[in-house]
Image (cartoon, rainbow over all chains, first blue to last red; front, side, top):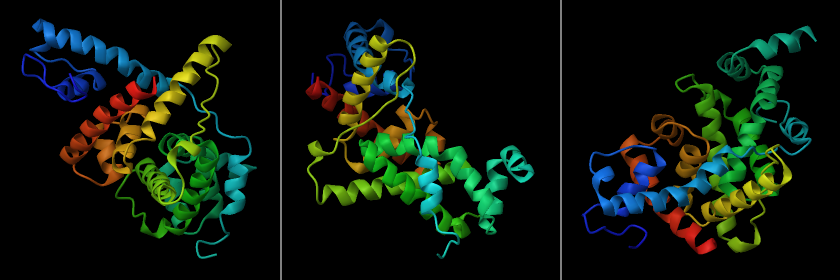
Length: 77
Length: 187
């Protein structure tokens, strides 16, 4: 199956990626063996995206001060 | 000190309205309040820590100069997300004309604070994901970062990007497919 290929049941991988990314459910997928396998695979792959979303990003020290210094006193300065 | 304390209790909308009337201390409070979020978005869109700082500075200067265009029709946070997203995309588009992509990726997620080993794994994962994001077309990057990494709703992202929700869903669909392909190649 390619990145956006079609499963034997007719569902596209793209449809399933949307379900995984939105943590959504469909009436068809749970009972379909093709979708179940593909959903599990996509869910494992998408976990990296979830981890990245949850990973804090450190603001560089002094950035706020540098911004304040770089903004002109007046909007037209 | 009294003025500063009062500022900290002001709402974003109140500060933005005051800043639009030329109140520089109000604007400065917005900078202090929102620079971490602006930096996070910039880093995730441009994929480079140093360039993300430049983007944030550009974004705040653009915000200060464009305050007269903020008329309160959008939430303050929507407007600020829009400003930094536009600055980041402009930066990416300029860079694509001059610098090969693989020379600029140097993202710097913070330690998660739950032990060096887990933190290292998490950072490695984040590095790979941000590298994958950086392979996407700019038109796909912004929706993906705002929706999947910032956790915004479809409606919020559509408002930031000023596009209809169906168009956003279409872009996101392509972005997600492309992202997973890129992740497979990078692993």
